[in-house]
Length: 253
Length: 349
Ligand SMILES: Nc1ncnc2c1ncn2[C@@H]1O[C@H](COP(=O)(O)OP(=O)(O)OP(=O)(O)O)[C@@H](O)[C@H]1O
Ligand SMILES: [Mg+2]
Image (cartoon, rainbow over all chains, first blue to last red; front, side, top):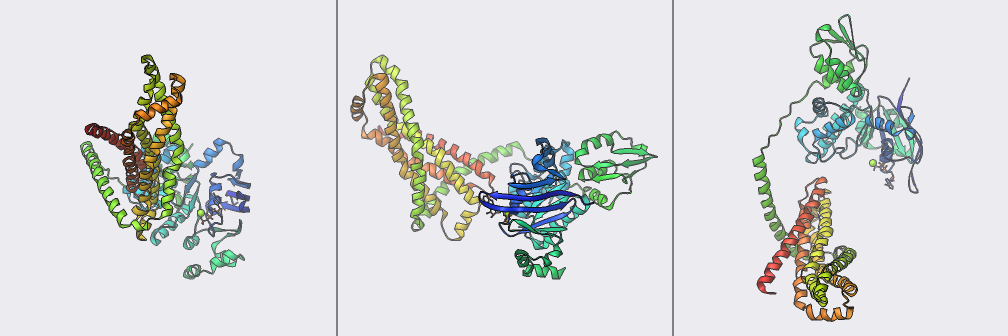
């Protein structure tokens, strides 16, 4: 039986008069790598903010593990948030703490873990994302854009969440790091059973995913295997799949 | 139960995850190491890095059987814990370094000022009238409200405080001397200077700091636009222009406040107050105060701007810089005011 970790039903979101989502539906399976794509301004970041409980929806429902999040008590929400990891587009760290302190802070804030374990776990996670141990003592501002991304991922992974949201994780990374990133994400999904949802513009990372959802004009116009994109009758998807980059990627595969 | 020993086999089971970390650790710690020969993971429901960490720490020397390949992978991924080389710092060198930095900062400020002035003269043609007007509005007109209220209140407070004393001596009319001279020479310039330190120095630092962080300053430089001439000069000009006017305005309101209080508490009617005012408030006194205006304006603008340019490529340093710029401006204004007093005394003004 397939279990869904997140289900979005008839979601409506508005900014004043402007309607961004007009009754959007999607389902994210437990333990899959899920990608959300769409043109600029399609409402991806808005959707992300709603899934993270940072923004109230204007209509419809969001279910986490089958429970409607608008009907949860504060305590249940706190518990739920502990199981969610997130990496925003630029940096997801506290600037006043070093990278190591950031990871340790998140671990200790969420779970009452002893110091030694927290420190070791920070080192393990930094190693996992491919950062040099020296980064442990560095402040986020002392890192390059790509290093900051990796460090943010280490922070997001610090308490082994059930679901991880990534907003354009590979933008600003060099191709080798981007490839490493995709591989790492894939490995994490395959080994730990974590669910990873990424918003991405990177066509190469798209092909690593299990499910792709395309947002266009306020609706999900496609949800399924990335190869199925070629058969979708939608203007934006047609434009996407006819781009040279997409063609080249498919030929290379 | 996360552990069970059957026939000298340790079965690990259930969720070996971060939520259960402390519970599992407690159970593992009391385990007698001689009571089992190997570990069996066939009943393990879930394993994450925290569970794997426990396994690596406590069952290193044991064989683990019936473990799924993905769990094995997690265990191997969390096996390697890199060593950290700790940075050592000694206190003496820290103190020396910070003193050295402070002194260096002053020299840097002076060289920055020189650099700005040279640059401004060289690029004087590229200054835009539009930004100049915007700064003039921002720097002066928007400050009028707060200056009105504070100056009026200071006038009221001084007159009120001195009225009792003066009344006991029957020296009611001298309220005019006291209030007008102290306001003209000292208090109005100081109030205006302090308000500008809080308003303008902080906003200059924040504005330029954010421009630096967002690489806007660098962008201007690559376009061949001088940020000093285009951003800094209008700010300096605006404050140098406005401060004497604001000081005069503040003086008038302070005297107005005092005049109203004198009428009520000392029985000095406004016409008498005004008459006395024309006798005691020499133009020299007014001048002695007003001269401070452009100097304070320059100080506020330069320090505000300097701290803004010192912001490094990180957003969080803007906050520190703003605080620093306000504190330094206040300090500078009070020191300069004291220097004025010494010089005036010396010149006999
Ligand atoms: N705070 C806001 N107020 C008003 N409109 C907004 C606001 N935030 C976003 N929007 C509008 O909502 C729409 C969706 O924005 P959103 O940021 O979700 O797009 P996106 O899919 O993340 O785009 P991108 O790929 O460029 O990041 C856009 O048309 C945008 O103009
Ligand atoms: Mg976005």
